[in-house]
Image (cartoon, rainbow, N blue to C red; front, top):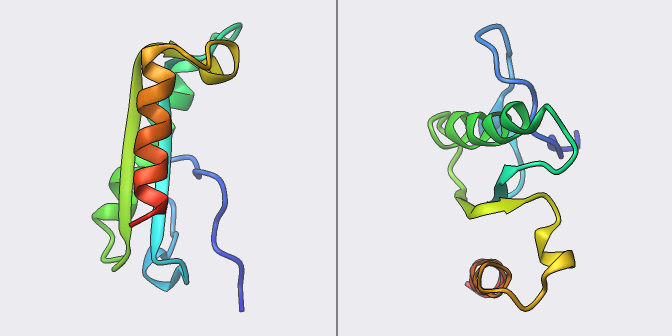
Length: 99
């Protein structure tokens, strides 16, 4: 069996990704508004959204969820594990995994 894509591919009109054949039934995609120390923050954030949008509109029959921590950067939950956004993120992830 071929492995399913594990990282969001670059979204372009020329991509020929066959999402319908992905063997997984659920995908959770976490996004952040900012990437600390990177001028590529918007590109990475937008790629994550593009991956989610293409997946959910592709005919793939699984369940996908996307969540974004407002005003937070990449790995914020490691630096501020008790902040409201980190607690909210933990609840979203655990809720998704426990369904």
